Amino acid sequence: MAQMPAGQAIIEALRAEGVEYVFGLVGTTTNSIVTEMYGRTDIQFVDTRHEEGAAFMAYGYAKASGKPVACLTTSGPGTINLITGISLAQKGHAPVVVIAGDTARDYINRDGSQAFDLVGLFKPITNMAVQVNKTERIPEMFHDAFRTALSGKKGPVLLDIPRDLMEGQTVEWEGLPPEAYRAVNSRVTGDADAVKQAATLLSQARRPLLLVGGGVIDSEASDQAVALAELLDMAMVPSYGHNDAVPNSHRLYVGPPGGRGAGEAAEAINQADVILALGTRLTQSTTSWNYSVVNPQTKIIQIDIDPLEIGHNYPVAVGIVGDAKAVAQQLIDALRRDFPEGRSNPEWRARVEELAEARRARLDAEVELTGDPMMPQRFYTELAKVMPRDCMVTIDAGVAAGLAYDRIHFEVPRTMFNYAGQGGLGMGLSVGLGTKLGRPDRPAISIQGDGGFLYTSQELNTAVRWEIPLVSIVLNNSCHGAEKAQQQKFYNERYIGVDLVNPRFDKLAEVYGAKGYYVERPEDIGDAVTEALSLQGPSVIEIPVAEYFPAAAPLPAGSGGR
Image 1 (tube, rainbow, N blue to C red):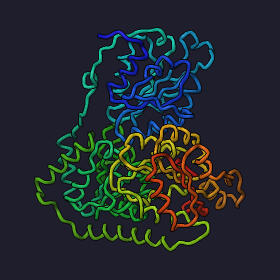
Image 2: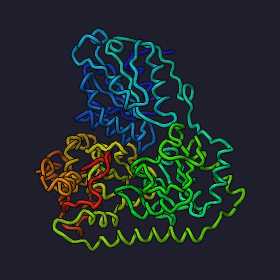
Image 3: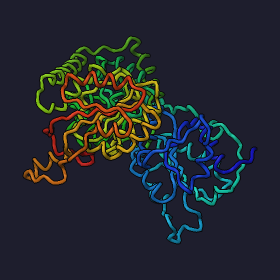
Image 4: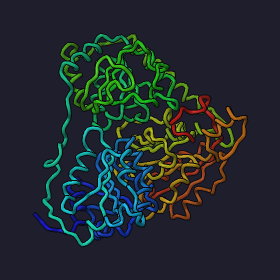
């Protein structure tokens, strides 16, 4: 064992897990940790301009790369500022390890300066929140942190470390590899009898549908999902916000469900007699939590890594606890024993293709929309012409950005990023920056409205300093759209707090040192996006768009608004 400063042991614990970046802000309680990254290139401290931006960037990095990441913040408000972003990591199941440098133990429970119950604050939004109580336990507790963050349903953890346990303290470091203290690359298979029941039910289905969720992406099961669908001519619909789980160009893909998705997808779900819910919780955003979308006669097979999710929102015909990839392969093997070449279902396949074609025709017709400023739908028709196949797209909350759910086509897993049911406005820019750091080989854009962009626009400074080539597109309708739609429809147009006065966002970008574009005509969108994607640094494209109030307003509670 090697004896080393406590701060160095923390950095070694992160590097043992392959952590490349630590996002956060410096503070007096964490200098003993952050200075251990001085001069290193294998792990770097990304200093953001606000802790919220750090948490959002960490989320984007983790979801894009599939790897764990860390945030490092100081006592009191420094760590409290992470809460919005960490709640997103909890909803989106991202393995973000928060290292909170807390006040010295003498300050705790005495109303000391910046002394708060950080563990209590973070418990509801993390998979684990604990305070380190002895310096010598730091390595052990980091093992616990990564074990918890990366096991089963992934998610964030908080390690609160009082200042006096780090400064001037040393610890014995064993240098254990991850496989010595947690299961690595383990895949939980499903119960054999349950898999057999599910295969029988699917083989008898006349209108089977595969609902692919975030578990498919996390377990890298896209190929297995497609193979399953092709075996039985199953319609493919992603759960809300996971459009990238399967290739959208596939002949069996219908479209995304939900209030901002495709009506054709909801119709396919409603017509299905058997739904295979693969790696999905059947959430409100996908199903409305009632039988308006899911037919009450439909039999549901649910597969989830978390046993508490089985039958949680809908009764199931068969429930299987297990890894999406492992169980999907079990089902493929079971079905191929009876149907080596698959079971053709021409009548249902024709219906699925009819629904998919109806969606394509509806979206294609939007090229005829006119107006000055342009309708926001027109932006998406032009973006589709130039967006690279593997482009990562971060979609902020908001009406204009929300149109992306039904209009952007995804072909590659880990290319769609959004507010994951958390619903917070303003995550677009920072999450997008994190995705680009997580997968620098892929192009990256973020789409947000004018309201959301100003939540974290200071992180343009971070993007410039770190030379992160994210293309940030601001659809400027000069309002909080969802709330204005509600005030128009239900409150006699008594508009208050919904109309915005903004700076020129392209000029704001230039002040920060980024490249700015201002595009007013649909025919100029493609050139601006193409040029921005070729840059070596960040850019902002401002596009004035008309107010657009969807017929479905107001949005369901918890849908994100704005």
